[in-house]
Image (cartoon, rainbow, N blue to C red; front, side):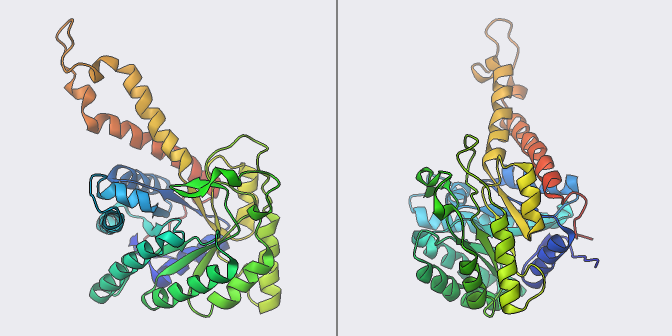
Length: 357
């Protein structure tokens, strides 16, 4: 079946269409963490270049950085920075000719108030425009017991669903640390917490699907960050087993769970392809794009050392303004990020498959 959407930010039913097209087409969308207008614009540029739709996501600290690290009320900065970023994307995504999902990343128990404050802003936006400010939010309560995890997710989804917001949940632990959430202590090939139980996925589906739309980050050995090979073992068959259990028990269509792949940076490409075949529509990427930006800027500084020490060359009087202009080296970082995302779109099979018309 062929699908099409208007370019711009997608929410509600349009978001579900985006997911449906990805799963039916056997591809996934990169979900890229961003921290400012430079990285936001680079993601949209990469999506437009690759004719793919994309998910733009913010951690709580990414939102705080967007607002400015000097603001004394850290909680307010996390909220207002994320809201400001969402408005930026709403303003520009249509001009890039792509469909963009605005998502917030890992929010643990301590960050539930942050998510609730963002829902406040979406409710206001819905009253004015008929659509929420954001597309989806993640509640990562995988460190809590499963009863609290699912009951709290249900509570929040009951508030989100009426305005077209989707909820992403996590069952099991994605190892490593992501902007203050999680710990490197989780890493280890023998840690059973890194592997979600299909029965827990079934339980989540039965509870949440009658309330509203949700997606599931099921752990199958994946980790945040890049680690030495052999430290973890990816087992995508857990995703397959979870899909089959839900389908058989609840008598649903094929691949009823909308699955998310966390810790995509540095992952084996064959394992990525296998995960996609089991209904993964979204893969997070952060570490690799951070490094891409930093590497390019570092190379530029190394190649233009004098420009970062002197405004004018002390030996021959050469002015260096065009070398140290922040727009020049920031652009180097943007272009490197775009290049790394070229690879991500290709790996996930979304190149040339934008629904935007």
